[in-house]
Length: 292
Image (cartoon, rainbow, N blue to C red):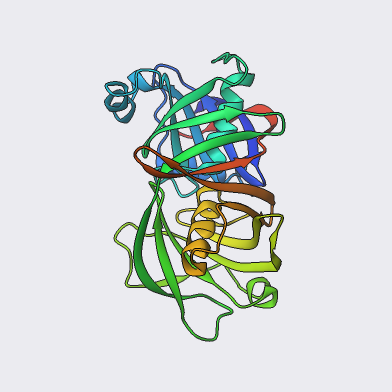
């Protein structure tokens, strides 16, 4: 048996099990990760995050050549044991964990550079949470989306934020609330590596003081329906802005079942970036015995 010391945390209900392994000595199997995330037989989580120094993991070492400031790597795994490129809620919780555990000690207003499988992401600690620059995004292909509770397939728009998303707009709250996301939505054509699928509706009124307000539910690849998806909220806002045209703002408030997140699009020298702001909490710490 392997004894693992862990901390449980969440960002708007999107929950994670985190553990520290600075030198990359703990290699959990997909089966062990699935057990940790099991809500009946394990701790229960949407994913597992290993705090490992970038130099100790192959994906992180490759990043250090261009970004030596990214000392720590967010080694993120979905609930089914599959690796994931990025997690917008997870990286805020991860930054909070690094600070709380004393692994980093940023000065006020310092940017924290964190390595991920989708590149280096900059996180800023604020009064009421954390803001992460998700970087550049890319408009993807169009899909047909079918899900339990939809009578007909709906068009979906692909959004790439380092991890893949397909966003579908619905007409009203009753359609959104009536979805059964215990089963994965069907996409046509099927993306090669799968995708997170977001369903979104506008709030009434859509625009309040220059900020657009929408509601969203999500089925995450490898985890099922979650209470929140950070990159998914950004994808939903980006897709809705794309459909709405030039009159749409760059500031968005997205309600998810676990709370509310802020999304903002802004120009940089390399192109438009999108940021995500929201809370991060650590709930409790403990140990778990894992079979070899």
